[in-house]
Figure 1 (cartoon, rainbow, N blue to C red):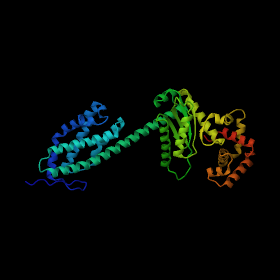
Figure 2: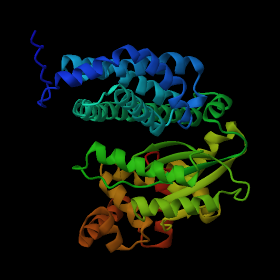
Figure 3: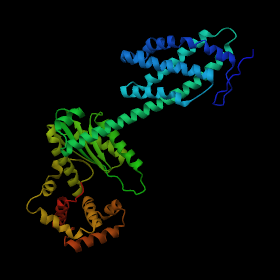
Figure 4: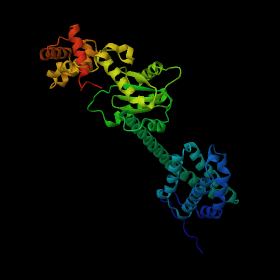
Length: 412
């Protein structure tokens, strides 16, 4: 009676011979035995596998192994190659990522399963069936390549999704802590912070390029976050935007004012984002002190920028007078109103701010604003004409600085 012609695989490779299919068929009865041996013996040598719960090893892992064995043997018998058969592998990969199993352990478990199946096929091979064994090994390795790809892809996707969820949860906690919408003690508990903390404000200006994509901005934010993780050993919680943001980090016992941490942070941020980086830190003794500390750190950086301090680490002592000028009292509204004539000309207010920040150096101001120096001169003349302030004089400069600091729309 003629044998059934071998079915051709749907991936374009030559069909398996009847001898190869017969050899594989002799292993089908050993599927349960092989699955138990892998789950209870072979995998135990993998790092971290023994720490998995018993029910995971005896149920989920064993079921996945059985599925893999049957999938291969059915493929030999039926000649089909359906990527949908990898669904269980993908589901288990996502579960292992969620549980924290290292990727190398997961991939090694699949490689170990392939080795055990190879041993089973070899043991079943009789004299004269060596060619059939080679056919099966070729198919086994090709199948393994596809499975490993599906598993690694799903694991990494799930891990990235989990990391994004954790990051967004931390962002919401920091946001709630800073704006007072969350109880400070609860936010600290979920952020795993305790004791006095360092509240840092970062100013990392982003060039406003209309052609820059949202992807580029996200990459830049990730670079900043990577620097923060390196500087604070991933123990900090942050809320970052396009131009920086806030960081809440454990205070080091040997750096109670945070100056050393800020200096280290500034060096690394400059390497990643350029030289115009400003950092200020204020200590919060308790969780309730964090919002006030954040506002103070933000104001220190804002004042340092407005009064022309060079970029870098800023301390309260560096801007004591200017900080005092920025506080509101009975005269504040009248001083802020000095710039009201510029209300319809935001470009003039920005030119004034940058000019003071760059210590009245017209070329530096022009470079920062992307203008010709003559354009800067024309704008400064227009500012004097509209406000009556001679910003080249000490008194006029002091009044302009105080007005900028006191205006509600001053850069923050």
